[in-house]
Length: 116
Length: 114
Image (cartoon, rainbow over all chains, first blue to last red; front, side, top):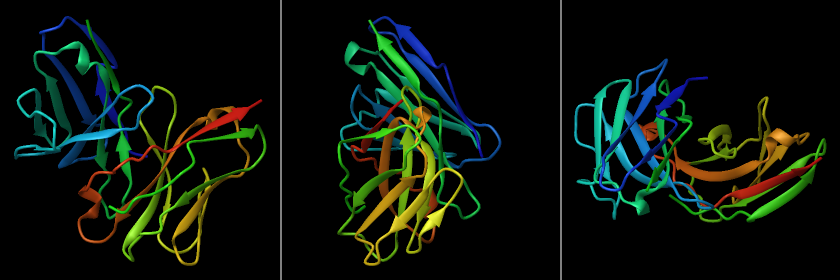
């Protein structure tokens, strides 16, 4: 199946710093990617839809100025957590839909962010 | 997207079949039933999906009720590696539906006992 990678797999940063997370579709092109956040023992929550060549669409309650999304190419979307705080510590997961008429989505392995 | 209801947790013995139920009484005619699972500390992975007929693949089988208001994911022989949270998700089909996000509920946490 198709592969989606994320980098880094984990990151620890100090409060107030910014962290960039990359999501890549390795063997297919994705004009759309999705970013989710997952807190411990909870389900995945959709944060935003990343669109190649246009602005991201954010879910209600997600601060677009804090979570900057850039879909630079057909295989890369980045999520930058700006001025991170301890409450931003979470597991961030991206996904990309597989084209060709399939409804299947492929998820990255996730990035665990810990803000001290 | 219509809502799904799943048990919070289930337990199975290794090597035995597991039936994971999902209720979706408000399903619409164009909703596909998708199952994904999430192993610990990993992103979700696709398991199976269907519309009306039962489906089989190398990972599992999906049994869909005739009225489509419920479905059951069947793992034929549970292994320790099947321990995960299983999510039943409805997704509208047709058109550009592939570019819509999946909306996750709480899922069922499956424990497999050796």
